[in-house]
Length: 116
Ligand code: 5GP
Image 1 (cartoon, protein in one colour):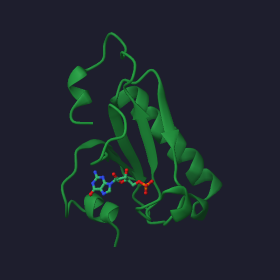
Image 2 (cartoon, rainbow, N blue to C red):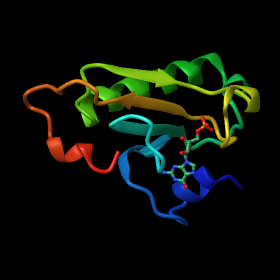
Image 3 (spheres, rainbow, N blue to C red):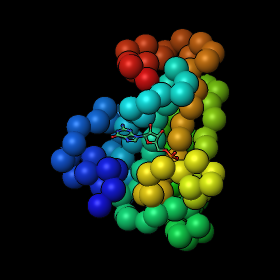
C-alpha cells in the first residue's frame, strides 16, 4: 500500500482541497511552488501509462477543475512524473498542480494558499 492509499483511507492526515467518488486532491507535503497540490485517482494504479485513455482525460479534467475552481489559480502548471528515472517517488498515479506565482483572481479565497 502506498502513502497515497493511506491518505485516501484517512490512515494518515493530509490537507485535502477537493474530493469526490473517484479523486482526491491534497497539498504536497514538500511544496515546490507557492501552491502545490496533488490530484490522485482513488482507483489504484502505479503510473500514468497503466491507466486508460478515458481515465487520463478525466484525471487532467479534474486537475484543471481543482486548479481553477478550488485553488483559484488563473495560471498553473500540471506535471506528471512517469517512472523513477523521471523523478516519480510515489507509485500511485498522480498529477502535480503547481502555481501561485502570480496574483490570483479578485474573488480568490486567499486562505486557500495555506502552507502550500
Ligand atoms: P512524485 O515525485 O512521485 O511525482 O511526487 C510525489 C509527491 O508526493 C512529492 O512531491 C512529495 O513531496 C509528495 N509526498 C510524499 N509523501 C507525502 C505525504 O505523506 N503527504 C503529502 N501530502 N505529500 C507527500
